[in-house]
Image (cartoon, rainbow, N blue to C red):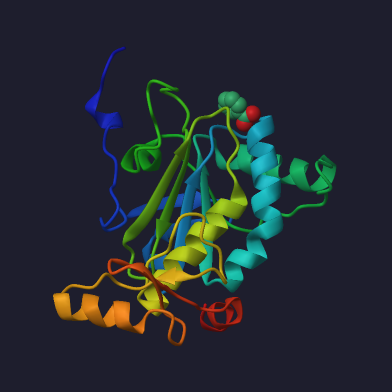
Length: 235
Ligand code: BEZ
């Protein structure tokens, strides 16, 4: 395979989100500046008028109010022009009845990235998959414009949008409550308290375990309860 460094720039977790200006279905945007103080999910799809992408947009379109309620702006992207985007979104709303979803209106901006400038800036073009269209990338960007989580899926596999929401809620819970989250965590499940960093704290933790709501499986692995209601009130 021919290699070309232009494809290999990939922002990393902890980096500032690369800035760009783009044309979208909701007018021009300056990213991430236009969304200061908000969480952002920037995601790519391979192409308009394709079935997996259509199922994804119907799912994200249906859930977009849930993301709005979490102070999160969705921004999509593909290597297509704005007129193709407009025609595809109109077709989705007017004609497609899939999986119990119909009349789905996609109100979040969809970037027209014919030049692949933004797709390359975010490492969304992965030449082993395609040199002319994006893979399914998802960037979670916090209100300070730092990249906090990244997902990459191949073109043939639709994403799980409940997982995308779980990751967003998880990142917000980590920030709001100063905790870490165990495997498969969902709001309402026990959370992990920061690890003991001295022998004294380790001893205290073990002594306090199972008093109030702290439970330690061992000195380095302690959990506490945060109810779903408490999380929903804060986020
Ligand atoms: C789709 O969205 O259906 C699709 C796009 C590119 C490759 C494979 C599937």
